[in-house]
Length: 290
Image 1 (cartoon, rainbow, N blue to C red):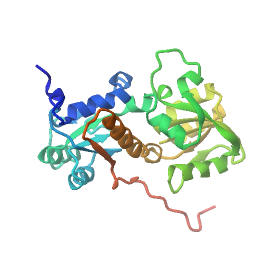
Image 2: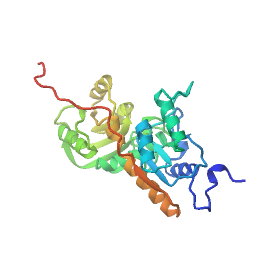
Image 3: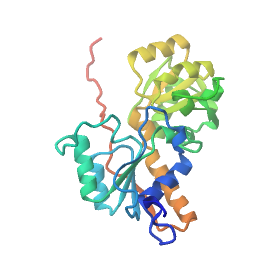
């Protein structure tokens, strides 16, 4: 007897389990890091799905948007359940999302580091948005032995058509990512042409980026001591933020889902979450102290 996730075969009804199976063709679970939590996290794999909302993270606001837009499934990049839950309380953030999703019969699935590492996945999309030609895995460019693991396996390295001074490149990164500002590490006139990129938290890629002899690493969540390490290793860094370097996955993954479903003759549509915003805001200093 077919599993519950397969009940839609031949009936014209697509299920949450089938949507996850389709996503795993792009981002196989075998690519996920061992610590990651991916797959269907809320709901029943046999629930029917006609419309999918793709979001960067799970939240009560995302569930409300899914309800309002007539979606039966949410696909997130960031896991809702990452560490074991000792309780599911509706007065706590994770419990509230679980409760609202179950009440509305909305399934919630996750593609995280498997999407980061996948050929044609998030980091290839990021390289394309940044205008990096002929991208290759950062681990390959750094000459690391296989099997590749960690951030270096997720990142990409490619070339800009023309070198740019670091400060000008940082402004270009902000424009391409659609963020109001970025931070950068390195001299403003340092020439940049060979670039590595890692969406999200990629400061651990500074060492591999130095081995790959890149001029600059574009990533997010760079801390003070990461910046000092980058300076010591001679690698410039542009920090576009965690949100800024990953939010592009919403439109790209929604488009991929619709096109893949059409090839199978499935009646399935997908849309990108519209109400998610970077939790960080930017303020300039007036009369900053010298």
